[in-house]
Amino acid sequence: MAQQRRPTEEKQAFELALSQSLNALSQVEHFTDQEPYLLEFLASCYANNFWRIHRSYKDTNPGHFACRVRNRDNAFEAAWHHNWYMSENQMAQRHNKKYRVRSTHIRKGKGFRYPKGRFSKANKEWESDLIDYTEDGFALVREIRHEILAIKKKAQTCTKRLHKLHKHFKKMEVLHD
Image 1 (cartoon, helix red, strand yellow):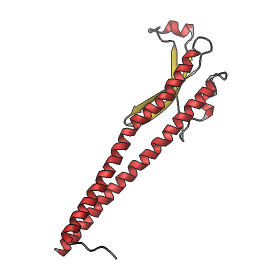
Image 2 (cartoon, rainbow, N blue to C red):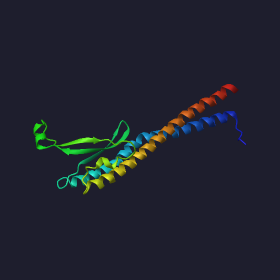
Image 3 (cartoon, rainbow, N blue to C red):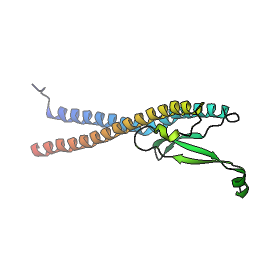
Image 4 (tube, rainbow, N blue to C red):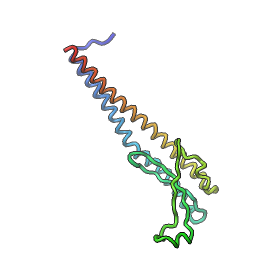
């Protein structure tokens, strides 16, 4: 059996419960807006590890791939690039002779992980395993971001429905006053 309350107390209790729910959903949305920056930091730890190892092989057995982690338009991005070195002839034709390394962006495609085939030119001695390890971390971060975006959408849907519920409750006041 429903608990009996006085109408004025019930209105106040309804408004209080509604405001608490809206506040909680607002905090969830705020969290989802901040999360890309936290995920960028977590992924940058993997990228930094990749670059530390990559640099250690620079002079003896250089790698061909590079990774970058960033936030772009409030969206997390972890991308890979294939590096190639310009020949002496190509360098002679350039005005800016400072940078010999050129990079080409690698498309990820569908899913959370880059396909392993995109790294077929990796140095088998050390680079392939390092790319796999790093990309596994990036893929997990991408999955987390996907789930957080789903939470944000659910929170937005609930917020809209609570506002709709509030309007519906107000109709009852108009009908019975």
